[in-house]
Image 1: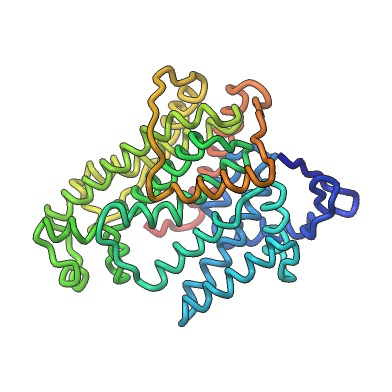
Image 2 (image 1 turned 135 degrees about the horizontal axis):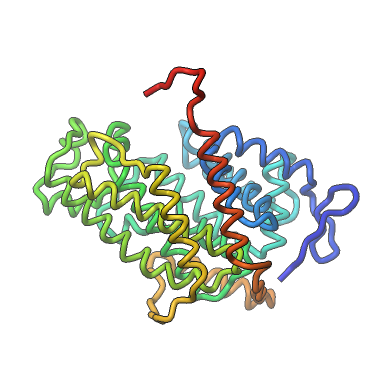
Length: 369
């Protein structure tokens, strides 16, 4: 695994070779995410400092890509242009902007195969072209692209490359995307999108196009949403075992993400599956409790060793990594951790509390609610 350092001029060096991303580029990526993707920026603060900047750099390019495809009248042409940007970044001659230079440095440092960010771009294009999803497998394939890739790339940033761990990272990403879909059924429908499997809708006697013209909640929709939440829960259970293979200082944040996204599904279920009339939220008090649960989960190793195959829809991502590592002789880093897990959890909790305080409305300003 490569190691990186920042030289006196702020140039990132990997294995003794200067890359084009500078400290200024990384700072520009951080500012862009702070302004345009506040949720991800906040979540990044829960990550260990040693990978936080790299995660922000990776996401900055992905954010630019999503905006470029979503805002284009010709999304497939926009996708082709972005694929060319990826080619240039992987060739070590990125376009002259901060996100591309930072991407080139990160994918080189962490040995990220091109297929992974390429799959994410493909998922963005599926959104922009209004792709319909007939089966649960097709919904999972979408989830693999727009979220499973992120989970897998984050594992690579953490130095974890074992197929079993990466399979569980893909599970977690897809589970989180299914939770998002379950929560946002009404919001998506009002923009003309539906991610519930069309086959499920037909089985329930619901005409998808007719419902999209007048998206109101009914019990049959609630049953399908609950079914999707159950599929997500199965993947969350599978993903939990993979967290043990992460560096110790990363485990509390990943367990927290797993538990909090799972809680979104539970909130939807409490509403009878009604995510059309309103949008489920997890309270700050409940988040604090879940963070405590995350500490407990991170402080004990899972004694039940279940083995699950990789999701069929995610297999090609793992194949790409296995091939890349075999050709280039890459192995994962042991990364046993950096200090007591309780101390790391205290850091995570402190960050979360500051974020909650920052998000509270000022006593001197009227609330929007």
